[in-house]
Length: 249
Length: 342
Image (cartoon, rainbow over all chains, first blue to last red; front, side, top):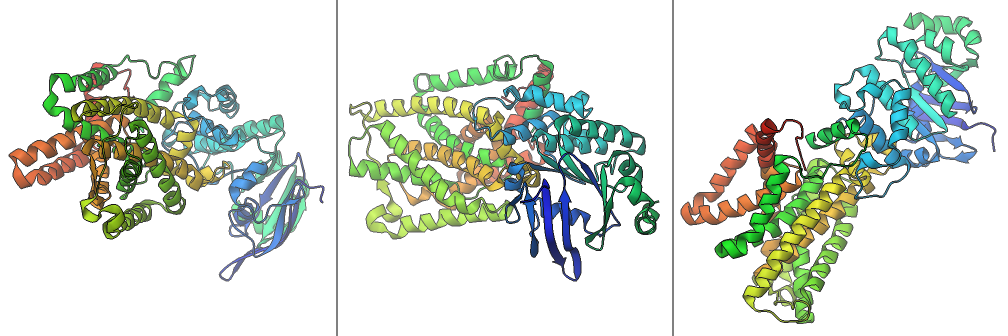
């Protein structure tokens, strides 16, 4: 057993000659927002893919609430309480923003009804509230393909939150969002996570966001965690300034 | 689908979601009511058209099955399999137990088609697109060759007779039984058409339709895309089964022709003609198809396929919404508020 919500032990995965996960061991503690930073190709997204069962490591284990979830497919891991938002929003493009959330909640509650209109499910108000929480209430009835990239990212995160996860993994939640909007979106998001008591991990390239919103930071490089600490410690670290901040500045 | 958009718009602006969707208020809905009344009047008003409408409704139920899959972006080129299995199930039942009630024959046919759908479905839901379509075709052709080769059981290419079942215990003459089948088909068309529309808009049906747009997200919602597809596949097989066993009873003979791949392609053809993904389109398409086939083969000899082919070409190029799409755009002008996909 471990005291961490999610724990990885010695994860290894290789793509051809590239080692995308090189003995990754990491603990993610409940109630914290962990930011993952690092240069492109360091294996950050691969880490999220392994944690959610999309990729299977050649070695190592992923434990969620102390139980081994390594062999499970993504959907089973989702059922345990791990949700994911994507770098490129993964939405149902022929549906509206609200319908995307209604579909998510239908999946969460395993609704088996084949006669009732999806818009009439009791969870609808909850989803409208969630849309409001991420600041997208006004586009509830707009097809997601007609939304801006920033709005789509928020809907993608809202879809993940609709599942009431214990842990939310987000891949660059603010990429593709106008810089003037970024802080506003993160305020909304972190507020929503606190309100729903969701632990989160987010991959981020914007150090301003990391500084303001992360409780902890893990620095990825060449497929492994190089450093871990508070934002203040990490962002001052000479290696980070050289390898990570230097690159994105 | 434009239908879901229209719905959601009305749902979000009205305080009571889910209400009023199926209230007959748009002129198009009125047209369906008039259409159904007209269909019900056919045996009295125009008895010579009775058989044509009977076949069109039975075929329309099969097309409805194909239409269900189109909603998930999947095309099956083998759904005549379920049409045929149900008809043969009915024929074998009548051969084994003469004077069985027609409702039992119907149920037996549907059970046969659904079980076959479960068996084949477990394989085909692993595939998408062209592989899905072709694998369905392969299964249907395997069944076709079984029907052809196992002559002693299936009657080979001649098929087997489907003796006239009893209706609630009493034997009926040809004409009366034809009427029973006719109104049974009207009831099935309304009931199953209604159910399918509700199913499309229900949580289960909506999850099924996301197969078309994003299976990755579906998986990350905790749903198996294969199982979601299987749910609709079973519905589609059952609907084809209803159509097939009704057709078998109407024709009184069941042949391997029921399962022949051309029949499967015909169902896809009609579904696209009527309006891909539209419930009403399945029946409207089937009616027009049967009418063109019947009359064009009388008046235009061997070129009727060419007429239908040209018609489909025009539909695909200029009216991708099919006949239903044309009707909707006609009615939209008169009533812009309720686009009324239902």
